[in-house]
Image 1 (cartoon, rainbow, N blue to C red):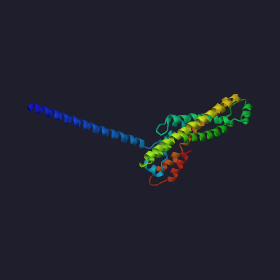
Image 2 (image 1 turned 30 degrees about the horizontal axis):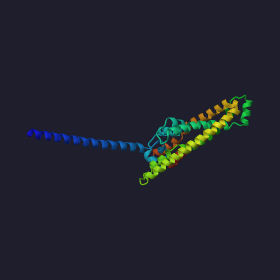
Image 3 (image 1 turned 180 degrees about the vertical axis):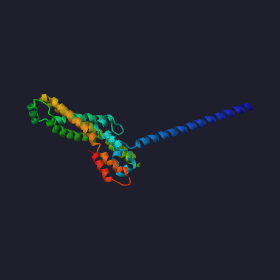
Image 4 (image 1 turned 90 degrees about the vertical axis):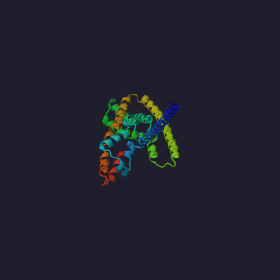
Amino acid sequence: MVNVLKDNLNKHETNNIQENNNKTNQILNIVKNKNTIIEKVEEIMKFTDKELNELSYDLALKYDTRIYSQYTFSLFRTKHSFIFAFFYSNDYNSKIIKLDIFLLGFAIYYSINALFFNDETMHKLYENNGKFEIIYQLPQIIYSAIISGVLNALLKLFGLSDDEIIKFKQNKNKNDLNDRKVHLINKIKAKVIIFFTVGFLMLLFFWYYLSMFGAIYVNTQIILIKNTLLSFALSMIYPFALYLIPGVFRIPALVNKKNKRKYLYDFSKLIQMI
C-alpha cells in the first residue's frame, strides 16, 4: 500500500513538473515572439536614407548624427540612377521598377539624341566626311541630357512609391489605419499601372522613330551612338560632383545645436533636390 502511494506521488510530481515545463516553454515562446515582433517593428520604423535627408531642421538636429561622408554617400545611393537601381535596397521601391526606370532612361537618351539630328547636323557631317566633332556636338549632347533628365524625373514620379509609404509610416493616427492602408495600396497600384502604360507607349514610339531614322539616315548611326553614350555618360558623372555640395552647408548647420543655422540647412536641401 505504501509503495502504491509513493508511486502515485511520484507520478503526480512528474506530471506537475512536465506541466510547469510546458507552461514555461509557452511563456518563453510568447516572450521570444514578442521580442521578434518588436525588433521587426523597430527595423521598419528606422529612418531610411531618404527620410533622414528630408527631415525638417528641428528633427534633423535631433536624429541626424551623420558626418559629411555618410550624408554624401547617402545622396549617391538614393539619387544616382545607376547606384540606386543596382546597388541600393534600403527603400520602399520595387527593384524591378527601379531597373526598368534605368533601362528606359537609356532608351530616352538614345531617342532624344536622334530627335536632335536635323538638316544642319547632316550637312555638317557631310562637310566633315562623317567625322565626329565633339565641340560641334556638345550643345546637342547637353540639351539631350537635360531633356532626358526631365523625362526620367517624370518616370520616377509614377514608378517610385517610397514617398507614399513614408507618409503612411509617419502618420501615427491609428483610428483610420485600415482606410489609409487601402488608400495607399490603391494609389500604388494606380501609379504602377500608369508607369507601365507610359513606359510601353514610350518604347513603342522610340522603336518606331529609331527604326525610321535608321532606315533614312543609314550613315549616321555611329555618330548617334557616340552622342548617346556621351550624354548618358555625362548624366552618370556629373552627380558625383553635384552631390558633394549639399553636405558643405548641411553638416555645419547641424553640428552646433545651440547656434541654429536653419538657412544653411534649407539651402542644402534645395541643392539636394537638383
